[in-house]
Length: 107
Image (cartoon, rainbow, N blue to C red; front, side, top):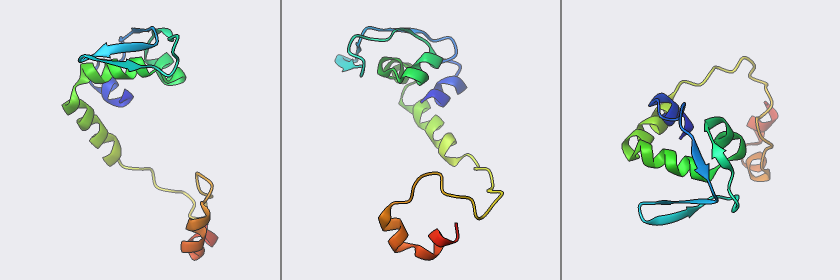
């Protein structure tokens, strides 16, 4: 969402007031901080995970721009690994180790 907002030139200068929720399209959407975050820009929204900022950004972007941004971020080329023996980015789940033991051991 943040990337789509930045790419569209909406999020850079956007600031919303989070009072704990926002009424959009006839529905009240709560923020996880029920007392609100106060004034929120993109940096604070990411850092504090302000739901009101992202609900408002989504409403301003519209579904088409959100989907376009999502498709671009998912299909963006990933950097090639420099080391095939690099450890996994997250701990392996027991089922993964049982199902793919040779791959796990080669990491």
